Amino acid sequence: MKNKLIILIILIACNHTLYAKEFIPYKENRMSIEKKLSCSIAASVKFNVPIDVLLAISSIENGNIDTISKNNNNTYDYGVMQINSDYIKDLNNKYNLNLKYQDFLQDDCFSFEVAAFKIKEHIKNDSGDLLTRIAMYHSKTYKFNEIYKQKLIYYCKYWSDYLNDKGYKLYLFSEI
Image (cartoon, rainbow, N blue to C red; front, top):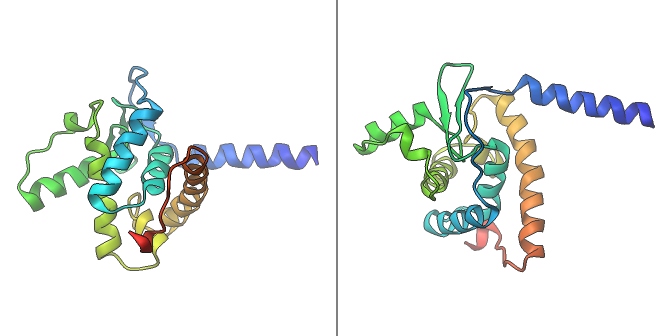
C-alpha cells in the first residue's frame, strides 16, 4: 500500500512537471480569498457563468496578481486568471480595444471579467459537451483539453463544496 501511494505521488508530480510553464520571476502577490470570491461572484453574474467554474480556473491557472508566465509556444499568460497574450490581441482586434498586458496585472476584478467573457464565448460558440467547451479556456487541442477537464472536475467540486459550506446558494448552469 505504501509503495502504491509513493508511486501515485511521483506520477502526480511528474504530470504537473510535464505541463508546467516556464515562470518569469515575480514577487509574491496573492489575491485574498475574499477578493477572489467577490470578483468571481461579480463576473459570474455579469456574464452568466458558473461561479465554481471561475474559481476552479483561478485555482488551475494559479496566477498571482503580477504573474507573467511564458508558454512553450512563445505566448505569455498574465495575472490571476493567466489571460493569454494571443487572446488579448484577439480581443483588441475583434472589439477595437486597446488592452495591454499590464491591465491584467492589477488587484482588481478585470481578469475575472475577461475570463468569464472568454468562457461565455466558448460555451456559446464552440462544439462539444459543456465541460469540453469550458476547457477550451485552456486549449482546443484534444489532449490538453482532456487534461484540463479533469482538473476542472476536481476544482469545481472543491469550490462547490467550499461555497456550500460557507452558505452560498449555487445554481445549476441550466437554472441561470
